[in-house]
Image (cartoon, rainbow, N blue to C red; front, side, top):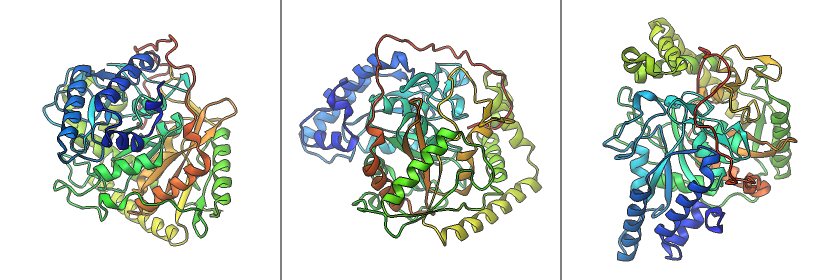
Amino acid sequence: MTDLLEQSATELTALLAAGEVSSRELTQAQLDRIAAVNPSLNAIVTVDEEGAMERAHAADQALTRGGPTGPLHGLPMTHKDTHLVAGMRSTNGSPALADHMPGRDDVIVARLRAAGVVATGKSNVPEFGAGSHTFNEVFGTTVNPYAPTRSAGGSSGGLAAALAARIQPLGEGSDMGGSVRIPASFCNVFGFRPSVGVIPMPSDRNAWAWLGRVGPMARSVEDLELFMRATAGPAPELQLQAPLDAAAFGGPAPEDLRGVRIGVSYDFGLGVPVEAPMLEALDRTIATFEALGATVEQASPDLGEADRVFGNTRAFDFANSLGSLVDSRPELVKPEVIWNVEKGWALSAREIMETTAAATRLQAKVRTYFASYDYFLSPGAQVLPFDATLRYPQQVAGVESQTYLDWMRSACLISATGLPTVAMPAGFSASGLPTGVQLTGYHYRDPQLLRVARCYEEATGYARRAPEGLGQGRVVETAPALAGAHHHGEVE
């Protein structure tokens, strides 16, 4: 590994802007790193070497001409394979789209391109991003850089593994039910789920969709903030515009957290099962926040209606976006996606109205909680990275999983609130596996939340610990030989 690839996106963009490193040099280093370590991870599934070097050359020429450049000018980056990149294979991990070559960029890719990013390829995902374990019938399974027999999480698992493996310092994930936060926990990196609309995620079929978010993942909070400055801002496609702009992100982190009030829960007030190493990680984090001067008390928002809000809203969104594909080509779509689409089709008008009412009551509970606390701290995942040959954990802390949702409920409950949440590394278990926590703030207090996370990062430094032994000859099986039945439970 070169020192160049160990550096953050903030450091690298400064070097690029100063002419101390060229985009071509950095892009070649990334391509070389992919060649060296990706065979043992299967994190990057499409690589455009020729196109990447052409784009890097153009970035260098633009800098030489002295014209305007964006905040990420010349930075090479792979994109999540659920995001369209014009002229680059974009499969969503689905056999139905295995040869899909889109003619346009998704909004997030277009914004990154405008900010100066050099697209180099695509990172692996579960089919249609449905699931917090990254495997599909097109490319196979992505494994964890810290333990190559274990899951890297999902659906942004390819990106999380690439970040941990020092393939790139920064990238765009997405998160409906934990797809940024769970892989961040599994791979010892940071992930951010912003407030709704801060990074636009327009839907062709529902301009009011709110559950899914695009958000950055990185090895430092400073890089998350850099990403937000490069991509946040209004979009005409959205009916509701976020009251935040890109300039709000960044600024100095607080020296300590005196006066900050943090509520914490081990089980979300609902008896959610969590493995002991994840509870120990939460204890470490509590001790860190208390050492920084914060007041930490056991307290949880009333999340009693969050399961219904998440489950029905997600089913509605899946039926809306994927229903026509499932109806026309079900043989090409995995059973979990079919199940969730069918659940969406089956929602009655009464159920939809009752879900909206439940979401309204949930927001009232959230407002009550944040009148007393600034932040809510909870486990970043319920389990350690698990055997990558499984579809999902069959039990959590001795409690049998009845649906696919059970093992990732820690993330889904927070998704239902719509609140901004940052996933943070929390050290390693006794067995050497990464752990994580999630810190949640109030609506549109995203910049303040990230500054608190940066204070925590400076006090811990967990993400600086790199995986060992990558690129030493092991090749991951790319065909998904996964244990367990195709369980028709919740996904993502």
